[in-house]
Amino acid sequence: MNKVVIIDDEPQVRRLLSMVLKSRNYEVHEAEDGPSGLQHIALLRPDAVLLDLGLPAMDGLSVLKRLREWSEVPVLILSVRDEEALKVEALEAGADDYVTKPFGTAELLARLAVIQRRRFTRQNPEITAGNLTLNLLHHEASLAGDRLKLTPTEFSLLHTLAEHAGRIVTFGQIIRRVWPAQLSDQSEALRVHISHLRRKLGTTGPQIINEPAIGYRLIDS
Amino acid sequence: MNKVVIIDDEPQVRRLLSMVLKSRNYEVHEAEDGPSGLQHIALLRPDAVLLDLGLPAMDGLSVLKRLREWSEVPVLILSVRDEEALKVEALEAGADDYVTKPFGTAELLARLAVIQRRRFTRQNPEITAGNLTLNLLHHEASLAGDRLKLTPTEFSLLHTLAEHAGRIVTFGQIIRRVWPAQLSDQSEALRVHISHLRRKLGTTGPQIINEPAIGYRLIDS
DNA sequence: GGAACCTGTGAAGAAAGTGTGAAGCGTGGG
DNA sequence: CCCACGCTTCACACTTTCTTCACAGGTTCC
Image 1 (tube, rainbow over the protein chains, first blue to last red):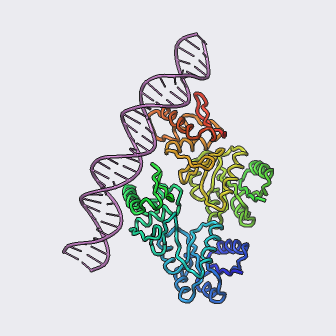
Image 2 (image 1 turned 30 degrees about the vertical axis):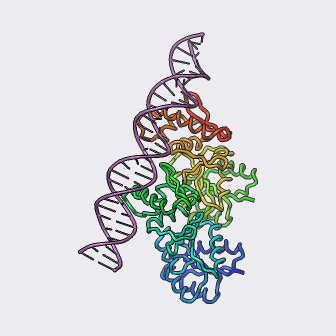
Image 3 (image 1 turned 90 degrees about the vertical axis):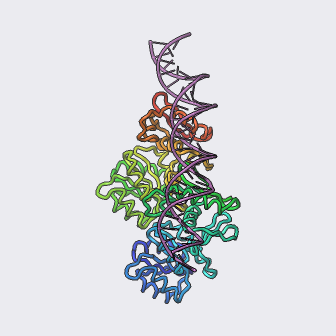
């Protein structure tokens, strides 16, 4: 049976996760702070770890770094807010994937299955759309295997579109995501970056479609 | 069997909903205030929640926010008045859809089915009328699964009609909604947009019926 | 039956929105 | 310090959407 350790300071979250996982035949162990979580992992040698980033005293990132000194167990990050910076830091510190609270149980189970499946291959979190692949950890993009050279803003923009591939992403959603906490209107700049992205994607890759007065949509070619 | 929790302070409403749902083989549980409703949900793990916004003591919005801290259960809002602002707030707080009292049982059941169908997918506020679906978050419309290409004005107009599907919406209501803060008379333009919409809806989708000298009504085909 | 009003739709000009080259600005490395 | 690079702004051509107009039915009421 699969053993999982949950490290989260909120009893409600732990109980919820625990119920969901037990119903899927996981053997679940709970810890409410970093030190006891590490101890559990050392003793139990679980098959996966669910780790909350916002822990009191010893934060999740520190726990992860300590853990990675001696264990390669797959770690799924539970982050409360949509804090891009923290997530990236966690991924760089060796996390396997992350989900943002609140999350659906289906999504959680799916991601857990994914990171366990690559337990021995240890890949990086990736997003694909057609022949386009985005490696979130290394901020690398490739098109049909060839490396795409993207600037940071372009990568963030393409990430946003690829995450919702096939669907419309409104201008507002894009701008809030790519330029958080930006007061001035970035729609002019957005148009220019879209133009640059289109040139780099060429005609073989996914296409960025404009939905007039609404937003953009990334479609597989 | 599908479990549903109803949170509403009016016994009459609860009893009515309960009867309707039980006749459709739902297992129904009632709660008359927020705290007991949350308790029910935590214990029962229902498949859907019907939540009245106008609760005494702890209002529906607060209940929803608390609920979303630990559960992704589909929530259908029951709002008494046609308060756009509150509804939007509720949708942003994680509600899946809403119905405005008084509502028909058919509408209620349809929306309940829709939000449950996407229980394991993603939660998007949607409006349906027959085989027409409007996704408000992504500004997407689809007819029998096929994407409908609508301009912003057309989308807004169809949204207004679909929200009150089956009922008459007066010219004044439509114009105030689609062209807010517009001084000049838009009734001429409205006729043209209705014409365009009808063409796009074709004969298979819902039909836009004219009620002479009053307004329009959207009916399921 | 006819007058007054209402509605549907094609066409065309007006308005709004979009794509892209080029230039300016700021920053950080050599 | 200067250069390279990335981001933003600007200008302007181009595309899509919106509104207005014209006119052909249709309905209502006397």
